[in-house]
Image 1 (tube, helix red, strand yellow):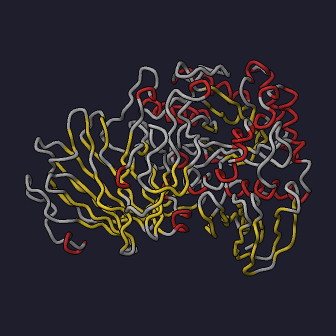
Image 2: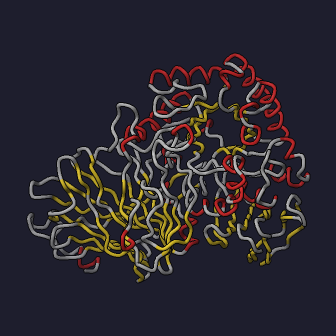
Image 3: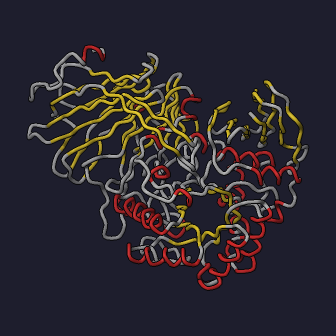
Length: 628
């Protein structure tokens, strides 16, 4: 049934009759269409097409609560009229400062034989589809939601680590390697499934699956490990992923949005659906929302560098590089102490640098011993500690080692963000879940790890050897909507490790990865090996972006993006392949910095306006800068 026909039938259908019609919702540009219907057994389903091509085949909907099975035996009470929704918001930590969202919204009210409520709300925009559930409430047991891809579709997915595994039992932390360009239906190598965002190619269309709008009442989700026939189903957290004494599963009153950004790869890469569907920002002093760049000793120098004199040196390094922050990592309370940390903060403030302090979030759920530990577990304890930090002159906190995706842990994250906002502190989550649009709702959330970042490549040569392919994957998935603390960039030596990337690749990461605070891994000695023009580029690099354009790329192989700040464009690319990759790039008159003859060398040359061919060396990259 066409949309025009649907709108001519009464909005209220006869209770007890199964729906005999398929109901369409189309995007404002009429290219994306969702078809909703009930099966003869009263099972709600949907399918998605774009420009007449199937993107998702018939897929399932519904929730199972402790008190009701709202997946079958349902009747359509009403099919609401399609309404236009629109929203404008600003974002300091993403791919685009000013964002506009517009979609067609339609609500379907379903009831079971006992009259229990399940409403499904769809929104269809030019760049994708979102839907959420609303019920009368009750603990969720499981979710029937699925995404059925055609058999020829391909997938780029990260396995979900198993809770209570890994170093000091700190998993799950969203820190596995992606499996690239695999057949849909390939089982996950780990029983916990696949993480969001999950990337697929279905015919001519790309699809990025994620969720948004998490308010602490619901658990975080993932895709189940098995997807027979290419039908992926929503999965939930496992038993260990609850805060001690807290709930595992959410309350069914209102689910997060299930989000599908879809279209050509450029449409997906430029989409902001992951934050478009997030809740509006809580009150927070705009003057305190200060994206920036940070010096950081731990990435290369590790634990022994967390001492007063070294951290003072890194404050001076931030001053030299015209950066904004210095991060003091784990065990500062033992190795520096609160009073000398106050002295460091005052020294940094006098130099125009903000000091950031590391914390261990954990209680009993893992075996970590790094400190400060146990100071953030309750509201009263957090308020006291955060107030102390603000009085000391600390600008923000990095909080590590969370325990999973249960509802009580999601509530813990949000409680921390609210208490930090009350104290005027910025936040960086590590050993953490995917933020799922929180950077819009909580402007003090600058970034989050939730990725196998640079530090892993310093531990083992085998991990270093995989870093290029991995880095070339994360902008297409992990960093697609949410800020990512990959902690990029090294030009000099890494102890006991032979770098697998050229300097141009490392430099390009500074532009291709987005993070509210970009913590650069390079130390002063390594930065000194870079020519003055590279150091100047990093001094002037924008702290936030006004716009983005996808130029070229293939997930896990290579990427070229253009980012704009004011009237200046930064075009960057890197190549993870073992052979050279040519890219056609439209540039203005400016400067191109790329790889030199050796792996540790740079080359600089002027650019002229117009289309140019740039050859990216194997494991190499470039950055071009020009005025609009």
